Length: 159
Image (cartoon, rainbow, N blue to C red):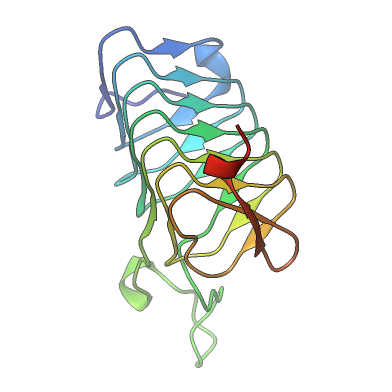
């Protein structure tokens, strides 16, 4: 699995096992850490001082702002109604669908094995519980968990 020549990598980025990642057409901010078996697709952006844990998938159209934590096996999606073929049975190509963008705001944390459905915004400082399926926007500093994810608390009240 390669790190393509078109990847923009900030200073002091740490990719612990570069032979075990797949990065292409994306940007990775300064001081970010990337674990093994991570894929970051074209037109995805990861900010500075983030941690992207192993086995995570950051697809096209995802923006992760600065200082975010992405746990092991986190999956992002970019198509609300995915299909392999068109109505006439021909295989879909990039021209047959539109990328739906997703944003993870500064200092948000996403627990292991969470799934983030296309088109949501995860607010600043929010905390997504492990295994959650996020189907709608998450407010700043909210704690969400479950399937589908629901607000169960506020990060600011946990100190």
